[in-house]
Length: 288
Image (tube, rainbow, N blue to C red; front, side, top):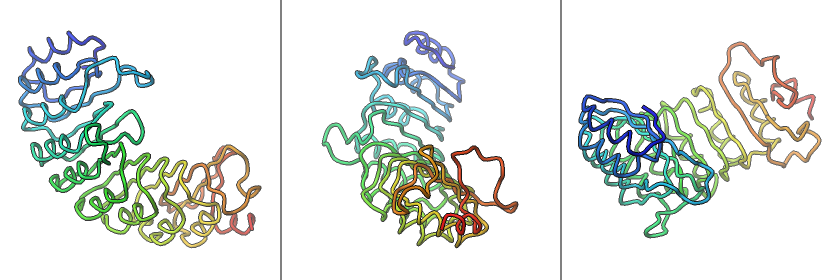
């Protein structure tokens, strides 16, 4: 169900106690999620999307309280996608302890690098609680103010993690190193606007051959590192995506706009648009 009216979803969930999957807009607000938690004991998946993601000021009353209520009232909950504007470490730890059997947890705080709004601290401890308590977690999306410490938690506890999405997080290459060096089952990694660069990527190049794909956008990976990776790992397609023009027209130390790495048995593809360059052995020689 996806409804723009706050009263209608509340009415709906109160009269649909067999519901096991819910997709709603944030105008359901905390009170609507509390009604859902009280009535829908078979709920396994919750998705809450923003009704006005680009609005400067929140126009609905949706906070961490709604998600805490669902985690407490829905014992079968396994999958969460939750857009909101504020979160606390305490709420995340409570959610993790309420529902330690979740396999998918995707939290999208609309304001980048938003801290715990009560303590102004990073949300490392909260997400640490999520990954420590949910041993079967397979999909995770991070947001909010996060340091390298959260990636240490991920590297330590998420033995079954398959998909990870990260944006505006971390302090250094150490964060990426924790993720790539410890996750045996990781197959898809998406990173945006993080300070991860050449050192961790090249040091963990062998791990990339066991994954399906790695996407990096607006990070600190240089064109030189992309060329080295393409030369070092011929079984990977290493694609530089840069709409500013050919990357060899700038110093090799300049970061690329986007990097897409994926496993291949067919070799480089030939259907790329003009702003995509493949870093295979031939192209490395051509760009040298």
